[in-house]
Length: 413
Image: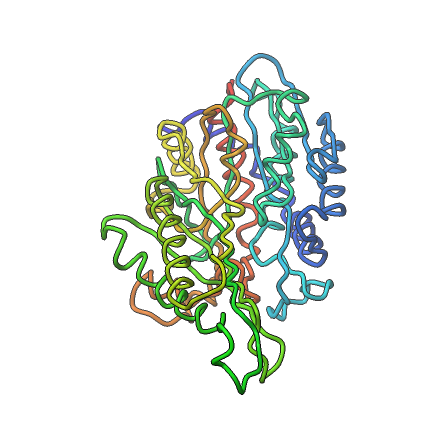
């Protein structure tokens, strides 16, 4: 038997203005904006929410947008989409490719805003079918991990209704038409670490008078590769990446310092702390071995929390998605190593469900090499790739996922 939430969701999304939503997506894709600069994007979303009847505020946390639709007694449900783009030069060749040099919606946030706008319209138009309060949130600066925290610091839940449940979704590679739920851990924590190696500079012809920070940095990079392979149990998941190493100015100058930028991905706080301690130990040890004039500078920088779905909430949302889209469309892939700042919006332990929507175009997926799902996933453009281009066929389904998820959490008549 189909639930009331699924039946109503299918009714409310039966006649979505798909061409208009696709044009909204193309427009957002053409005009990407970096974190905390999402002024145009925020204006587009805010304008649509006001037109649909939401009490709307912009400038929340900088460039955030919040729309509230009060519709009688019932739960308060928050739907969130992130809005920022990335410093990536687009190489998709799409007719609606980015018109801003060096900036691209390479992570699908333009699609997320489109889904949110479509869902907000559909739920407002169908308000006679449900009761409760709907909070629609356009979040800035997800890519830098600042947006959710900035909105909270701007008194988000003092100025607007505090939700009983939060819902969000993300476009990912995979054959379009699948919805990935995990009733628990679904995304990992992320931690940035910066290391400065202090050497003693000099002429390239007289290395004996120097302490070369480049060589020391190279030893640190090499030794760091053993942290996961030799210090983390095989049953644990962790990734350590050295994303940047920078030193020197000319061929024949031994510089005075070298800089390294690291990123850790972990799925437990205990593993995170162990890895940070290992990074410190290795950096200090290698600098001591090299005779550096002082200990390295080690700064633990920005971080993203783990994304851990409330099991009951996520199972409820996954169930209604299965009803709406049919057997075999909902799967549990287990936790990913990617990270999100969405969980910060759930401060105080608010329950939430966060899921993935696969979005690779059918022709791209069918042409991908590989004998199984994992091999083909590695062969198609991923998030943050200059070739990442979600299929327009996901526009309507992505609206439907939010509408059905909201209705499964509101009071449906």
